[in-house]
Image (tube, rainbow, N blue to C red):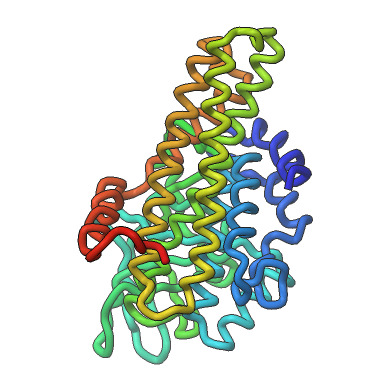
Length: 366
């Protein structure tokens, strides 16, 4: 894992500007065979119980580059949805796209008031209208998984589809939407799908499958792993800064590094336990709320760890360490942006609701 981090990290500096897809980072990922690592008969196949190892991999990619980690996590998310809801022919086709074609997948669900509609034209044809926001990877994604409201006589609901980009009209990208503080290289543009024609074979699952629990909320474990990788990078950059500046003898610096160290280790313990619990519960009946609540706790704890590590780093390095071209300045910006995930308050109150609905608190996670 350390070698993967060392190969990815140097490229993150060159990718840190708006409109730049992290090409070199993904060359490393592709050469390491990581695009298909979760596919059947692969090292971290979804068919196996290796969630802890997958979370560790995501953390390593995030430590090297948070924008690359965000895009890679979206790729893994898309493949997991195919694994869950795809039929046999769809799995064969889309998994072959990864194995033989090195195709990069992504999940684009966020939208503004305009939204996306999928019109059933009959005869197995569908027309897309509307746009999505925060489409990480933008035109660098070969197989975007897009959600939208299905408009059909026979069925309605929130439908997933996967767009074969080279076979349809070009998706219109709006880069002016993406002017963030950090995560610039994730190029999370607004993408317009109006006029794209798809077929039955491009529709994934049934309407409503995307929000099926515990898979929807349980995915928070994966982006939390990428975020913790960013916090590890911040600690490493702070450590190097203090050593290079000969500030290691200051007792206050020692105290701050000690706190960062146990915070990061706390995050690692949470990720390990979350992976183990996911594998333990996923094939048991009646564990949906346990999984979603545990994922929510993992997300909440790791967000707090990241925020505290950033504050400690700021106090340790001062203004000098938060100026370009120091790597800490970039990682700090990226993590600040990436931590802004949807509905943190709802996640927290849902944890409390679950606990209060239990008769006792002594066996919550058994």
